[in-house]
Every structure is written in structure tokens, then in C-alpha cells.
Image (tube, rainbow, N blue to C red; front, side):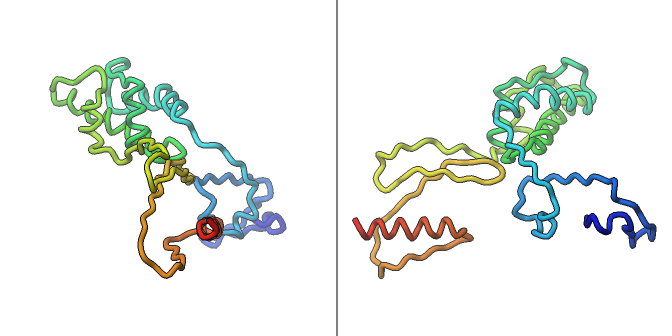
Length: 205
């Protein structure tokens, strides 16, 4: 990917020389944290925001549902996946910025009902929560319920990752100690500074 060497790129595997000066490389990633700095420095970064739940439902309705029914041998209109069931799958079985896992989950649900059709069982025309649970099992992700700040010793925060955000409930307890601050886990510098500032504030008050 060095512009100075692209005209005389030599592939050691097939032992053929290529001219890559007119080639455009496109790479995709859910997170840039795992990309080597030397490679990242040569890339033009285009950030694309994550899909909202409403957008994922729309994508699933327009693309994945019909495609999954055709792929698994069902006729058009033979099986419907209502919006509430799509939202249930998104919230409880996927945790990603894209829709790759969502497509697989929908395919699993449709495949389980297509099996019922093939076995001459009483197959439904509409997916229900029972069918989702049977095909995908117990929920993998459970949304946290909102807790107000009236509970003593508990404060509400927000956590972020490339897959999305979530609500954090930080609890405190009183215990004897030496007054030193112990930080555990793989914390970044900003998180460490925030903890030190919080301790300094507590001591000052």
C-alpha cells in the first residue's frame, strides 16, 4: 500500500508482478482499536454511525425477512415476522453496530418454521415470541431497567463501546481501609483520572 511501490508490486505467493497504482482498496471494521497503527496511518477513515433500533427493524423488514423465507423454501407471504418480534430479536439476541448477527438470527427463526412445514407439522403464518425463544434460546442480552438516583449509594452512568451504549449502575459501600485508591481492570487514562478526581473531591468534602 505504499504509493511509491504500487507500480512494481510482486506477489510472492503466485510469483507474479502486479501494477496496483490504479487499484482502490476498501476495508471495513467495527472498531479501529485492533487495527495496527502502521496500517491505520495509510487509510482514509470514513466513520459511519451505528444503526438505531428503528433502522435495524426497517432493514430486517425490507431485506432479511423476505430473503430468509425464499432461501429456506417458503413461499412469498407464507410467513410474516411482525415488528415487535424483530425488535425483540434485536434487543435480546444481538449486540452490534451492524446487522450481521440480526440476519443470522432471523434466518434461524425462519429455518425452524421451515422445518415444521417440511415435517407437515402445524406451522404458523406469523412468528410469535414462543417461536423466537424456541429457535434462539434464552435471551443473550437483557436491557437494564432505569434506576433513579433516590437509591442511596447508587448513581447512574453511561458506558460506550463500538457495539453501542448501555446504562451503568455504580454502587458504593462503606468499608475500613488505608485511604489508598485501588483501580482494577483494563482502564484507560481518562477513566483513571476520573477516579482520582472523584477521590480527591470526596476527601475535600
